[in-house]
Length: 370
Image (cartoon, rainbow, N blue to C red; front, side):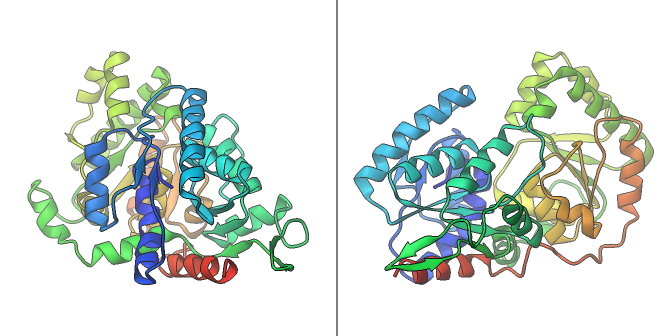
């Protein structure tokens, strides 16, 4: 089950492995990201079959969209009758999919289980906690997330799967499927050709993304980020490539911050594209500035230093190995953090695994359900 573009990317390796094993499965898309054409590009680029069902839920309040998803997912599951439902990450799709399946007594597998930042201001924190506690299989992407699950009592001795009278523990350390995806896709990318079309050189630019609700939906927070970027630009004098998210563009206009954007010298706004051009730009950047959780995993895997424009992170593994550093929203702090990360050696060990997460996940599912 998927609903957003990051979920499509992270579930693609599982689909590849299911295809390799000729297993029977279908994809349900909730339509949480409702630009159908952009989503179709991702399915095509990743070589994943298109969804059998697209609920087309679209935008709305958290309660409204989650409610629509629950009704649509329940109906689909009753019609299709799967043995196991897989959800990924911490979106409203994750929450709705896990709850709908659990209430129908269908086994639930949570890919990328155990993420926590202990910030209850973020709706994602509630989504992943609920999904973890109703799931039957929890596929932890790192040792840290594995420990998070155990500390919450989701471990052997507290909850089991039952197959033919045999008790099975339900937490598995698999690694992160993003590593699987990156390793496969990077073999197909000519990054030099992609960035040269934009007049860019390897390690000669910064790559920026901002989209999170807690950052862009509040004028003062978004303004603080833009002022920090102005300071970064003034100090480093390199192009800053910014594929502006539709939500961010809308808020910039709504809050009257277009002039503040223009004051960031070297900022180059580009339209968001598919995953392949994104990886090409990301992998060749001197530095990435982002508030994305998935991009913290990607940059860590690609060995590109990243500055996280947030006060907390649910991916502390990258901070621990020196791949990422939090800057918060203080405009004066941002250029100092950028300077530190630009100078950092790219020799960290990737905490997200060896690129075989999907194989482990599918093997576990096929073995346990046979």
